[in-house]
Image (cartoon, rainbow, N blue to C red; front, side):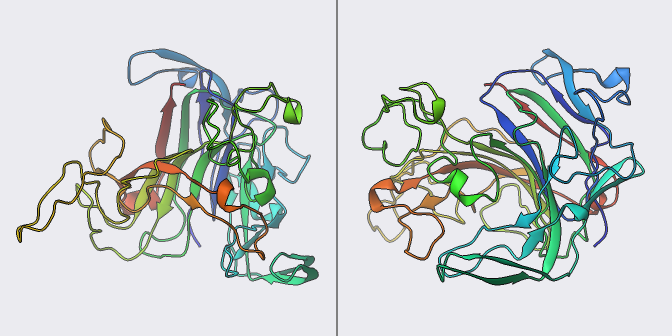
Length: 368
């Protein structure tokens, strides 16, 4: 697979949301990193401040240029990033799920890039099979990498800029490169750490939701060493998730979007539980009556005032995950009273071949 993510200037500027950490889940990538301190000495002075879209000046607080070749990102080796050495255990009750094993040897730096490679390579280990409830020899047939800043550097608001080259070919499906944020209470791919935590963003006491949210504002006890009566969770912000594949316009997108595209999403809980939009269709904002005189199609409840730039559409294919009751063989446990709906507020940006051949800048502005 060719290509990569490149954070020539991976910069964080500003302050103040609940702590999120940065993850890169790519298949051949380039990024920027620091060896000592939070601001890389190689970051140009001209890049150490920036003006937001609403005219506010932000000063640089973290950057990484990845100019040192041969950096080691295995656990404990780098002050800012950690590359995982574990199976990606994202899976469903029927046994389907991620096909790769994360290995820190898939992450390297060379020529000012952080490269994350994917190879068709078998990895076997002895592990616990949650479906069989026993230890056995497990095998995955692809090897890749994930780099994150969990428990090292937290973004609490401001601006993130990432310079990246996308991996592979724009028409080749099967890859899902991504740059994203996750609240620090959860840890990506560690399923137990996100149960009842992801993607909650709720700080009110609602007894009907108390059992669904692991750290609820209804709790009078200081569980986990945290303040009582304070709701917490692990919200997710996807700066980019890339979907390559065969071209062809996708329904219900306006303007028309086709693969390859970048999905950009805010995921929160709790979500709305009634009159939700149907997947694959734009929200019905007003009740309508069919031409044959049938009863009206009711209006659907969804977020108002969403704005989209050029070549960008609302994402009608993902309105949020329903985390329903689990089956006995699943690795996490959730009863019917603990089930909940999450919301995803997302956009789809039309990409082209140029994003897969040269560096482009992707930016998030977040005001808590």
